[in-house]
Image (cartoon, rainbow over all chains, first blue to last red; front, side):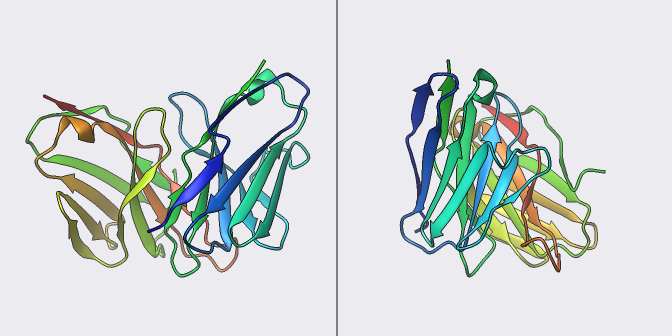
Length: 115
Length: 114
């Protein structure tokens, strides 16, 4: 199988606080993980590509100081939304790519609400 | 031109019919092609991958790839109401740099009427 977990599945936080989201590949090693954001009824938006042991590559328009990504091991990547604001409320989804192929497996997503 | 293009739909088919979903891509050197299904409020789920020209069948799903026409399709036979979802086409272009980032289409909404 290829199972990816995310934690938490949903979180509510106050404006100005930080939130950390974890993404784990449970049964395979993932040298590359991806973080996406999806607003209601809109397409997936790639935020950044995370490679184990190196700095993340951010897409144009994504603030790297606001969305901190750490890929500390072959099975874990974290996304920290710093100083969250209501406009950061969204569905955040990670995916992990098997080292042997280009298939990406998605986590179940984290629904973030900033009040 | 978008790198991966899909008709947004909705595509509406009656239960039991064949649903045909289409996708075109711009990078002629693309190597890997995928179809994902995304239910409303959920994350995408990989349902098919195809790497060479021709057809690939898995249960009620058939993926078809035509690299010369830069076209990939997904057929769903005996469509069920539970197939109602958004289907995302994804393509991994050939790149010497950039880490082989997979490009996702915006998705086609499929509605299967009972």
